[in-house]
Image 1 (cartoon, rainbow, N blue to C red):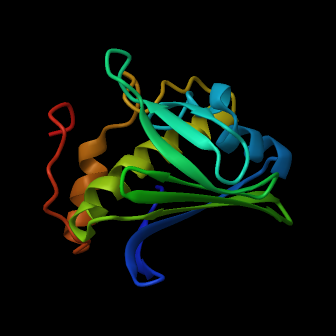
Image 2: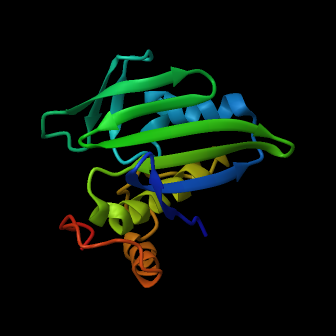
Length: 171
C-alpha cells in the first residue's frame, strides 16, 4: 500500500511519498513530466512550459477554465516542481540499484488539507504504478481508479491533520 507521511517542509506543512520502481530513470521521468503521460495518473490534465518560470495549466474539468501555476524547478531528468493554487508539488526521480525511485512532496498551503491530499496522492500513485507496469490506468477519478475513502480513513486514523472540505464526488 502506498503510504504518505506528514512533515514540515521549510516551515510549511507537507505530505511526502517515496515509491520505488523497477524501471529506468528516463521512463519514470517521462511519466511525471510529460502531459500525455501525466493524464494517465495525475489528478488533472496539464499543459506545461518545461523551464523555470514557465506556466503550467491544470484542466481538472473540461467545462471549466484552467487553473494556472508556475514551474519552480525543471531539471530533466531528475526534478520538477511547480505551484498549484497555494500548494507546491515537487517530483524527484533518482536511480536506485533496482531501477529508480520517485519522491513526491506536496507542500500544503493549509495544514488541514494533509489527510485529504495524502489520500488523493495515494490514489494517483496507485494509478501511476498501473500505468508504468502496462496495466490500464484510468486517471485520478476514473471508474476503476482505487477508492479514495479507505486511504483517507487510514490517514485520519494515524492522526494526520484533517478538516478541509471534501469534494462532493469523494465525500
